[in-house]
Image 1: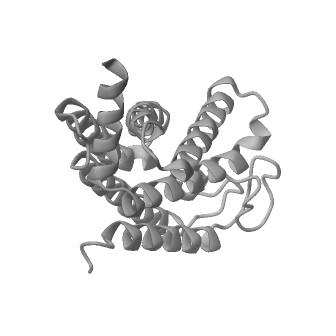
Image 2 (image 1 turned 60 degrees about the horizontal axis):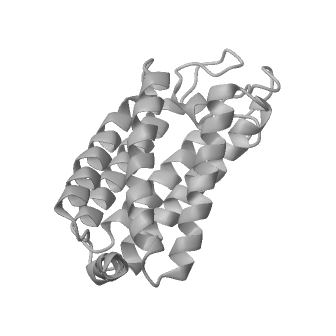
Length: 211
């Protein structure tokens, strides 16, 4: 039972740790440097990883946020490992396993000064894995997961666009959290509502269309 629900348990624990970190955040945001407490609308998740809050106060949120990130990264790494075992192609399975797990191991370093570099590298790796999984799902009969995959990818693209162009940067804290929520929902649905048979059907569909 524990093995089956390890990803769900890990994600719930991670979210709980992030909430505690937010409660312990002293204050300050991109909108108001002198504000008190964590502003879910104007604070980034990464603000929780700093030893000092934006308002200059010592922050006790960091150890909670660091552990939350470790647990979340481990949960997503396990997801990519398990998902790779469902893939009909050895090449795709290898890509999802090693790129996905590698990205999640590297993601832990998002709490360090290498934040921007890590975000770019891990974001690219996760996006590649999501793309390949989604392509196979598009050829399956799982309509809900097709729609969910499109939505998750679009939110991912939107978040990346704002992050790299700085266009409407004031919206990024909100979009960032919507993106994280969409990835969590997508991950849990893929983990618990798909089997290797669904991807095998996708493979057969491709083979039939080529004949």
